Length: 236
Image 1 (tube, rainbow, N blue to C red):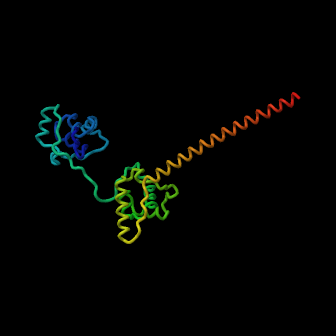
Image 2 (image 1 turned 60 degrees about the vertical axis):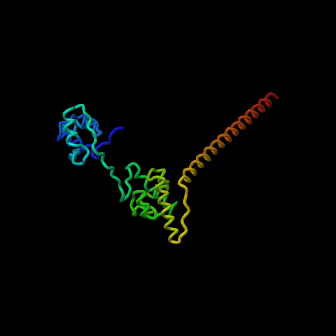
Image 3 (image 1 turned 180 degrees about the horizontal axis):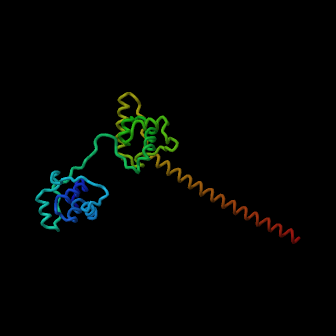
């Protein structure tokens, strides 16, 4: 099993290049980088300049481990303490740039199917702002004409478990306030509806094609009959 990389691999590699005589291969392998990246750092050719991060101070390496590597260029450095994964517990969810354009569609779907969910819950679930939610609800959003309600799970904006948890929490709160909770719409409904529509469209196309073939066959038969009748009249 491969050992984990440092928390900040490029910054750690920069520090090791500047402060040790480890080989580029040793540094690259320890930091999980390509050897050419380390070479570029050493030659000051890297496109981005990184501030060195001391792996000894962070506990990822010890001085003894570095000295062992410097004494033997073939030695593979061993991580002393794996970095603690940083988790985000507060604030809006981070959404990849490639999916940010899908947020309005996901928001519209939630507003339509789960009106019991508060703006604060939508904001945290999707990673958006209340102003955007309000604009979509009031149909004053700058791109409202192109927004189509789509399941945020299908869009990859949240997981089914996260959505179910928010729906359950919102329904429970609505019930405690004396309001009848809005019916929970199965997130698979949209997909099933789309599949049904595609099947219906396919069946309609097949039916239309069959009818067209029958009409063409009938027209050809009628034309042949007329030709035969005309030929008979000419013989007479």
